[in-house]
Length: 129
Image 1: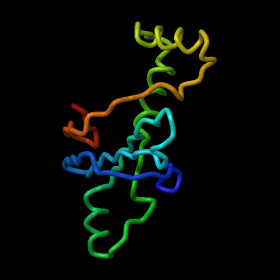
Image 2: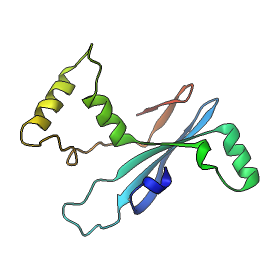
Image 3: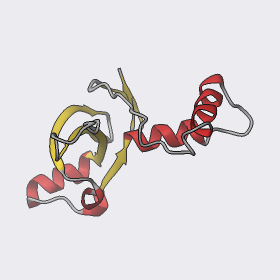
Image 4: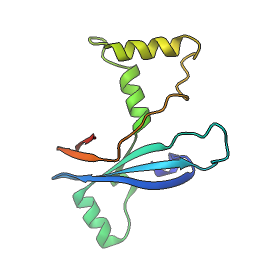
């Protein structure tokens, strides 16, 4: 949810919509830009149904229950690190080995670059180009 995000400056990176939902990509620059090293921006994807957005426009507010938010970095790392037991690709193996040796499982130094271009794939799915 919005309250769980870190403090900082937010910018709208991209918007996409399909027949059912509207998706907005936000990036959050860290609050303390004087810190060395500078934390990479966090990326969040917020999704709301078109109907809920239309109702929010009439009422002037959005209910927390109607807004779904995803931390892109966390979702990608979770996908890569917790892949299917049936299929493990070379990227997953390399990432596991890298984190095992010397990093002790710490993923805080791994950055994920996200393109602001969203393309609707339908049924609430979006592709980053």
